Length: 287
Image (tube, rainbow, N blue to C red; front, side, top):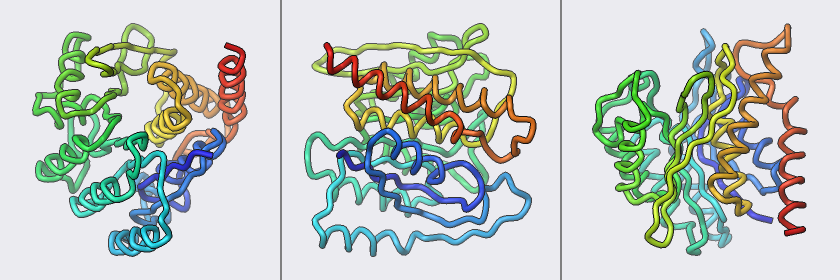
């Protein structure tokens, strides 16, 4: 069984970060090892929440794993709360990527809607850029992509602008770049770039754009993408599954008259994810 390490915070209530990564990647048939960077009573959309920074625990955990000779097939990171945490994830990558096949996937969660999240600075952006240089796969939204490449964010960005941004991100050294939130007509999805054997392939995948948005959908997308890539799926198939599952989660939530404001009903969509995984694996076996 493949083993994935996911490095991000955990909210006791609120469907995001580790509380979605653990069940989603696990149901995809991948051993999922959490490394929590912070403990929150609920995510920051709540009016009141407690917060405990766990940065100082990370080196202790890393040391214990090293003594046990533990290795990972994938190291995936999401929201990181400080430059120090970024540096520690870089150290984790250097220490635990013990084979050339070990993937490093970075979701540089730090901005949206043209603005950095509260508390982040250009120094944080610079540190995140260096982490992205270490990665095989990065999954920014357009705001984050523009920050990483020094471009001015454009709300009305056309496909040519997206392609230019993808090319700039690939210049950081990443094999695969997936920029989320690509929109066209009534569809929403991703635009991506894949580099292999000197060849570059660009692609898009869109599905239905629903009239509501919810917390945590970016973490859901990144979790499915990471699980599929860890299982050896090609980029185009992995991102398609991630887009489709995220849409199914939103659809299930919109159908629920008692839905909660803080996240989506991803639990109800897990059978769809498992079914798609099983069907793809069966077809692969028959090919």
